Length: 238
Image 1: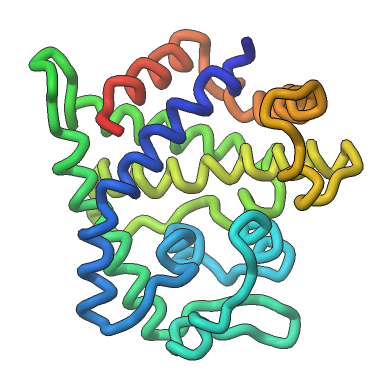
Image 2 (image 1 turned 30 degrees about the vertical axis):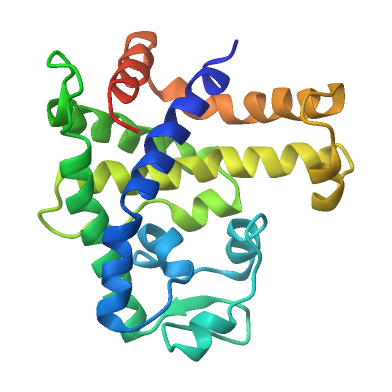
């Protein structure tokens, strides 16, 4: 099994687990602003760093849909004639609040130790460093979604937990680019992809190609560092 295939479910468990557990904390931010969650909730780490060009927007919204009515009517985003999206002043304030809330929650959540020997927050700075190096490596291997989301925005004095949560969010877009390239190369539309049987040969071929395209980003790390990343993420709650 490739390393990309091995670590993919671990990254998803940690990141999705954090986002799911933090849902109430993030909703408190939106309640305070009397707004509904929008694309800034999912893409804050990229949107705070740079405008989102049309190609990047199409890539990051491939699976979730690109209806931006909510963001426009609430005044948190604007789009120019070239299809480039930007946060408004309100949108930037909101995205910063979301990032801060997630970072604070991550510090609490990742420090939970169901077993006393688990590392808790002690491992998070090292993991943030390793994932940061992966994001640097992805500059030469990532597609439009990854380029739109990395490097991530991190405020001055950001905690390791905030950095790791943002960096993991961006890292997942490297695989998303690989997956999209794989099913498009197979001649499929998104509708056709979703109609495939979950365990059929065509689905497996797409997963194999996704792993092949995703694998180069991990070559930035030595074999020992890859083991360290896998074990460290595996020890975090999720």
